[in-house]
Image (cartoon, rainbow, N blue to C red; front, side, top):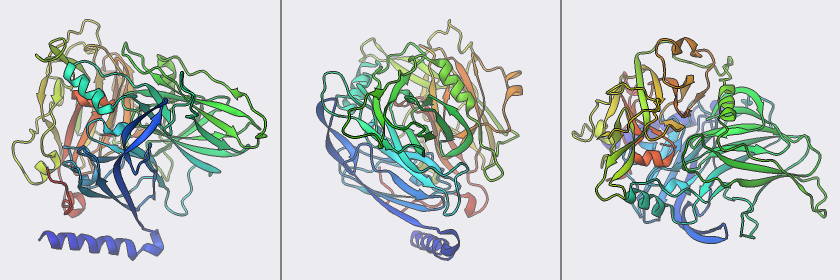
Length: 561
Ligand code: C2O
């Protein structure tokens, strides 16, 4: 039975790709990811890190819209492993989404799994990362989805393109950092450096030339595909003496606008056009953290250079400097976020749901639960609607698909169990409840979700990521969301479409999406420490009618728990 299904699937893939090949250039792209340990030297010290094919960041995966991508992942390390293709919709192919224990059991040491997905209706920059433990600190890379052959960008074609992956580097072993924090119940150590394509730039007390350089020619347009692969930090990005034109975020086109500073949260991607309108010289590129709450962050500035290749190589040029914005520059962050609007052209319309079938209100924030073995007798946790999510031991998608009872309950609360003044300064910390609870949606339902930050412990900006969908960011505000007045101000015409959005410190964000992808889809804060602490839940979207609206069967090499 299984054999016939697989055979039929194969025939369909072959027919689907070969027959119209001349017309639609349908292609299958093969990649092999060997996940291996590798020695890397940063900040003048060497340590072993987990990498894809020995590289940090990992190799860039390049494909075209409509391509089918097959990535054979071989796990050569001692950790259980999964890879998530962040932002790829995975329509009906949840088995290839990658979050451990949500859509799959991990690939165990020595095992192999081939992720198989099609890039339907998407083009732009996305990225992949390990989705288990804190391995994504070093197991990550960019995904470049080119438009279909012959289809231009909706902006002038850049002379060249470059991938710019921003990351965080710890001197010590990252798994040790989080394990130590979980044991104590306290926050983990912050990173020691911010990296740009793997290099932090010159750092104090270290003479090595750890600098990424982007070499350009004058009078051209370059497209930078910027990815924030940091674990826990929202970042500012700027280049001395140059403005940047934002054209795309999270693989959706936006109305172009100019800015000198990009704000990018963990999980997000941003494409900008850089005009090389100087004649010569070197210009500093800076990456620094944004944090407008009383939370410790790594305040090191990552540095790189933009170098005009025309400059006479024999002369040593001074670098044109620039200072990063203040760490708590809420204003810069706000105005950047407000400038983002969907392109909403005839070719790329913003299909914002105009009506709402499921209206949800989720509080997102921290909490404190008792812990007898922890340092203070308590541990910091995080929760959505007061539920601290507990990871199951087999994946939710398997439990759903094979109807295995006792793994989760479909009773995730649509509203906070007890309403309170969420962002007031007299918020008292209450213990959270724990559970593996999902929210069930019928196929094609429209959803409005208000994500409301709370002041429990402290308000803080939470970059929320939804798997399996893009959503529209229809509203945003400070303080408590007001269901009577705030919806009147929603943008239902050209709101930005993306897969990860920051809930502002002590404020709220409203998103809308259509549940047109059957499966189990993770929603979580993309600050890895908050995910670890339980700031996560999942949506279960039922099959619709017929095979085109149903989850495909799992592949034969699907990992076992
Ligand atoms: Cu980029 Cu669930 O993650």
